[in-house]
Picture 1: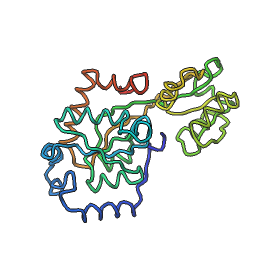
Picture 2: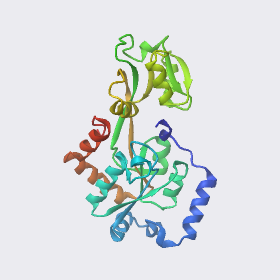
Picture 3: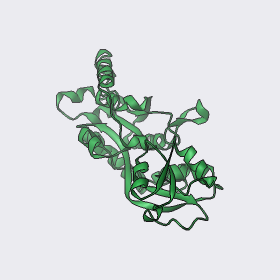
Picture 4: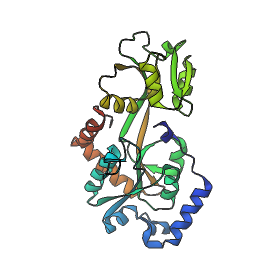
Length: 273
């Protein structure tokens, strides 16, 4: 899931989607009237009675199809539906490959993205974001009976398994670990359970998702990072009215316990705050 922390949208993809939006006619754009200068992002959603949401549909447990071919569901999907209900409209999902999801947002094919989008300076310069609805630190995962690792400093001289494309590969190296490159979480955790590495550094959400379906894996969180990833809904720049309305909806959902309930359903822990 670390690939969501940064995505470079290709110029060709952006041009293709932008041209597609132009050729499809003004009526296909969720917020087409906002291009005139006035912020009609919220009124556009209200007038059409739907919130158009971009999501992958292939990113379990956040956005996926039940049983592989069933209805679209997931943590992000359920929260987006709850937000739409608070706005008094329905959520309409448009499944989009992640490589083109931001270009589609820029072309105003969607009102927002719900796909565990991490907030970072690069993205904040180009897009607007809601209040975060997922907050997660990085963690060191070890065997449950291993008490030799209690902090990132204690990774020095230990062996960890990390994906080369993961942000946590560098963190493990900086902590002094001997890093064994793997293809992803599944391979890394297999090596840990076999005792071939001492630890795995990854996102807490990944760990919680794994242990929810593998409760007897014999693993534990040995330490957490001070910095936490904050994931939120993404909007095109200038959708201020819609962002404010979504933020109020999220605050209401936090207050009435809905976000906690959805979070507990998918992770067995409250990752919404």
